[in-house]
Length: 268
Image (cartoon, rainbow, N blue to C red):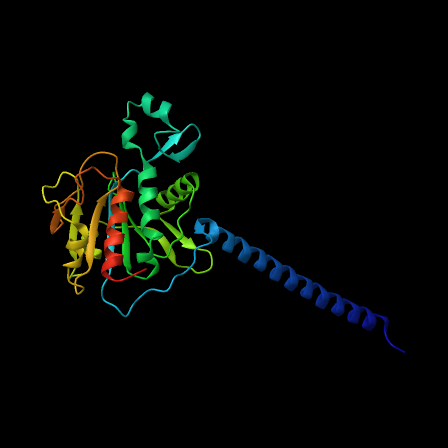
């Protein structure tokens, strides 16, 4: 005859095993939830839909762009932080006695699109791209970033960048836009030739001939102003030129540079 407490002991042991398995399942579920939450938090600063383009690493010839004095200023308007612009924040600027011409983030947006959408960049000739704001914040932009097409979305990305200091791709953990330390010269190659552009320069050149005469051994660095009025900092430039007898927008000036380089390197 089997003792009753033996049966109870087996049941109790079986119950303990089942409870242990349930605890393991709960722990696994909680771990999975924590992992999902961690991934969601990491993905807050991601910029989706960015294709990775192949770069031309075989050729040493390349170009670097620096956009100086970009108007990317964050301010608290109402209850939210926003990138100031002259159209949407006219009353705010008037109240704080600010010049609307100093709040033109659309200029740097157009300039970035002109560079990143150019055949020059798609051919892998763009080595680096930097943006320096009016407040002195230096931003590195990867050449294969797909910049937002609409101005509103662009301002949202720039606001996120200036608040979080970096934006990563969703598919890869690579920082596509990031705030870096000044000065910009420490990120430039040793054999680079830094060229500043301004309508105020007395040296008026035919850009196609100027670029054609440049050696392919040296990386060309073009410094272009991304503001409505004023001059760029020409202290670190090797040459200071003007490419037209008329004042040009940053996007138009960049378009001329890209066209001249595409002719030089036979990019169609």
